[in-house]
Length: 481
Image (cartoon, rainbow, N blue to C red; front, side, top):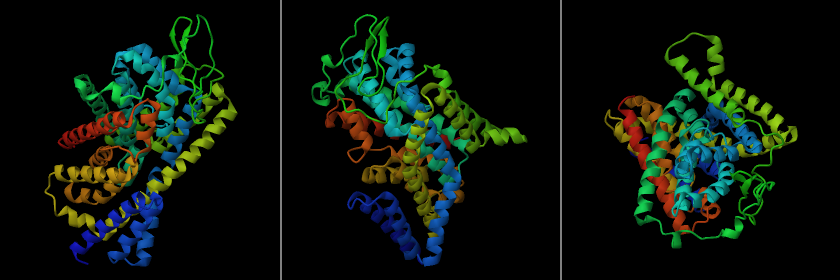
């Protein structure tokens, strides 16, 4: 088959997949499989070969990241149950003060908290962020909403063990330790610079409180407790944050109770203890990468540094601490919830691998490889643009990143591009233009008391700024690797 026919059929497969998801509301898993079937058959692979490639592509990526995603989500679900996230935000406020809270909260969400399923992390932290917003100043709502949006979305796609980062690493064959190191190098400056830029714009009149905030939560929603009063969990299941000696300021009441958020812990374990297993997992993964880089021949170090073993150790540790703090029953409920959350993620990741395998088998990589010079810049810009366009159409950060990376992955060997750069560029592009097709957009809009106009500024524009900054950081890294 001619190169032109392959390019046309690949374009039709991708466009048809997007239309099925957006226009006809077909489940993304089904749409991706149908797109893979069309591409295989239309490019002359044949029925048997096409099905074989789809199933093997699914299986190969599950071998790479299936257990990693499951372990990460389960660990996050248990941390959710122990109240670790609420307490971390409280400690950040006490340690850094209200003015620096947007930066510290976003960095925490974008790094160490990425084992938490995104929607759960958002629902847990949004009420706390909303209450902290007035303490920051007149632009508190704008700054906190932007910080949360940037931290959440950047973390899930760049930082191990975020599900997007795990999926991209598995799809492109990037060692997880390497993804952890380079993802960290991208996510930290991206979050800090993006929040700085948005804060500058807000202070120059980009944010209009009268039109961008809904003012849904009045002062009477924040009753001050009398000295020494004690309060149980609020409508979100989260205990009040201490505001001073003997004084508490409970979160707004009158909101629907969310089952996924915290229950009060039976025992107040030290916060560092709650996060120790997760931090240990990340340290072990990073050490495993160093062992590989320096060629250290040590079986024990290789074993504990293997990502599957490292996350398993973290999960076991988190389970033990969870049993001590909230009890066996709560841990079992958290694990059940985690299995439900991980199922869809695993399926989506797997069929993303099927599409990538079909694209590679069709020969698209060899064709596109001839369109670029030996420079890594052009392919990285292309993968960013493809992911950005897919995200605008589909509204899924993970889906757009996986699809874009899968399309460009075959080019990497021909041009000598490190696959981690393609993964990071695809992740950066998938952050562009988060808007009304995204569940995160509506959650941030409602939970932080913004109008749709306000959310378009803080979420859509804010995360798009982060997308461009992340691309620039990736291009800078491409000079050195």
